[in-house]
Length: 414
Image 1 (cartoon, one colour):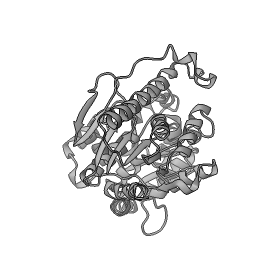
Image 2: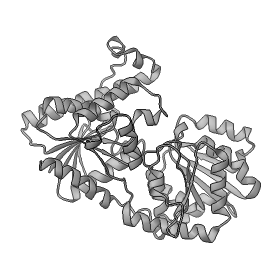
Image 3: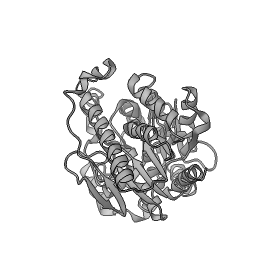
């Protein structure tokens, strides 16, 4: 198949899990003999066209339409304030990309595409426009999250409408967990279109046997964690990830386990607030917040450093970081309230247990989960080993690609 992919983030410009997913899944599809053409956002510093790992990547240069955008948009978007620049950039990327796709690749170069895949609302405009202009090309809307879930029931009415329209226009919907599928159906999304394909991780990269031990020890010394148990959080520093509640749980953990260090690895709007909170809670000296981009090898070393990995999201459609920790044979404590793909990954009871489910809204519950791991080191080691086995059985990128291609092929063959 020749497949066009619209994804707002892609190599080398990564923001979160969506970019990781897009890179890994397109590489695997390309390796299986299919042709992938990607359209993604250009921040102004990247080539407008290049080949990367055999994948054709288009990045049309966008223009700043922030001043003209308010002339014709709804009041809902005008309330975004400075955030309107982000929305206008996303819209511009979509419009220029789909124009290039339809006019240059299909009409001028006369290339035949078997399928178009587009990811989240950030590329939904392109998917909708493609469907309107070329209904003969099957489209798949990948929903990694949805506005109501991201905003815990609130959010932008415009984005909700974009997502609903894309779901109605697309021939198929792929989403990342059964939990999110059930939520989408409860919102009125067409259940007959939705298929669940779990995300994955690379168990060769995330392998405790392939760790740079020198880098791990350097981190231990740098963080002052010699002789201490390390609690690790990896993710965006934003409210929905539960990182505030994790920080609030630390004093409760310290009462029983005084020799612990909390390492927070991630960037986001809550960085300053977390620093202030750690001072108010009098745990500043036991908290490391590394709010910067780090190479993958260093991130893997952080997992190797950890005694327990904690991802207490208040709402999480999937959560690739949990898989990475499990693949590194680390016991995990995950948020299981509300929409939670994490609880589909993590087995919390029985002989195949890989970690614990907690209510990410409650610091005392998070503290309980961490303490359960720290007080049972032998059991925790076994949970970590079970976690890697589970990843190998259900959550590799090869498995995710196979399941995704099955949906694509069935649609193309109809």
